[in-house]
Image (cartoon, rainbow, N blue to C red; front, side):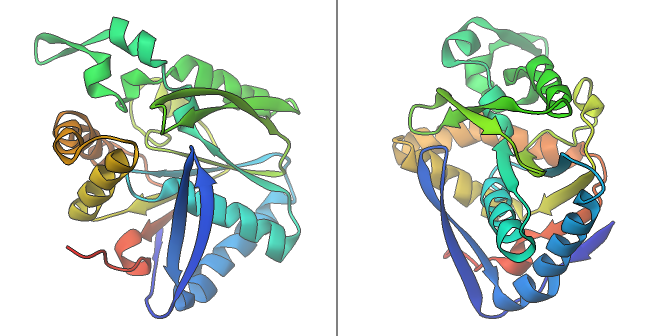
Length: 250
């Protein structure tokens, strides 16, 4: 596993993701010295397999969705390869389903709506079936709306040669997630304080008050961050987020 990263002038790209406008930021030296070579590697490998599946995994708030969108765009621009960014979030159970489902936690039954974002709040069976379907040609991929805080009715037509799939639990060392297979994997490593700030800000953008956003972080996001960091499989490449993003004001 390799770790890559540097700092200097920054590059900023804006993308519409899950109903929000979000920025991807990296230093220009990181882009030229690290991301461009990574893009070249993915492009070269993808010419031997179609579709070519790339997992981008990391804790909540690590920047997976924006990096996936950025890499997809760069693969098209630099290599002329049709690439698509796809998210795991579309496989969440719906809000109504989460209100009916429970998990056992330290001997107590907890409603999944209180732990939304944990592995059990996703339809892992549907996700594994969708992964298998990708190998058989054209298919559709579900999406998530962060404004509605629910799965969306919109589906993405999958037709890319390189499919960049991002999600918290793609490399989780727990059944059935350990059955998820890809051709190349990237892990985003991030400082927990940075993740906390991002996650609270995300909830506030979604309409929650500061108090509600803090409460959700403590009861759900924080637990997911800890679990994700503690039990992930080793990736082919590890990107250290703090090395290529601008430090947010503390």
